Structures are given as structure tokens and as C-alpha cells.
Image (cartoon, rainbow, N blue to C red; front, top):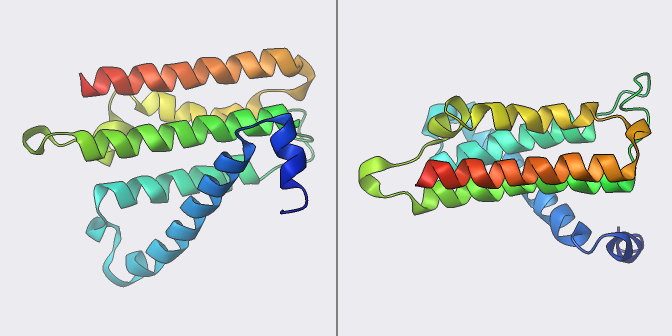
Length: 159
């Protein structure tokens, strides 16, 4: 990674930060998995539940690829960085919303996932269905639109 990271950072300045955040989330999930196995998922705090769910998205939707599909046989760097950017944006916004919510009206993971942000959360998994054949410009536009939708969704949640 240390050898390739400068190359990827030249292509996209956010790559290093996104990659390290992703690794951090997956490492934290690994630590939390032990707790969940011992005492159950209910024992996790709300911010830890976000970590577990976002790590699942990273593992199952971002990292897993199916070489036999038109949309997943290859993943251009711009698509990969855009997908990871949307996932990390959702993660950061969810963590901020939970941490900043007042005690009398606490925002929980259930409120985020089952409320107005549920369809947006589901779109994180649907990003992989964007075909590389659409072209880099179209892919980047779709992922930027999703990032704006995430920001707007969390802004309306915290109002």
C-alpha cells in the first residue's frame, strides 16, 4: 500500500483519507465482533452499531465483486473512490448526528436506518450496479449526486 498510495493520491487527493478511514472501520468492526458474540448486538452503543452496519456495507457491497456481471467485472478507480466517498460520507454524517443530538431527542441507528434515511442507506449498496460502460463522467456525477443526497438527508434529520 505504501508503494501504491502516492500513485492513487495523485489520481484523487481523497484516496488516502478514505482508504485509512475504511481500514479503521473494518478494524473496529473486528474488535466489536468479539463483544457481539459474547453479549449480543443490543449491548453496543449507537455509534458502534453504525460502525457494524457501515463495515457490512464495505465488505459486502464495496469489496466483493462478481466478475460475471456487466456492472462488476471491473471497477474504474474513479468509481471505487466515489463509492468509498459516499460510504464514508454516510458514516461520518451518522456518527455526527448521533453525537450531536440532544439527550431529550436522541438520534439512534434505528432512527437513521428506518426513517427517511433508509432509502439513502440502501443506495450505498446499489452503487455497485453503476455500469463502468456509462463512462467516468456519468459515474462521477451519479456518485456526487448521492453524496449531496446524503448531506441533505442528514441535514433534514438534524433540523
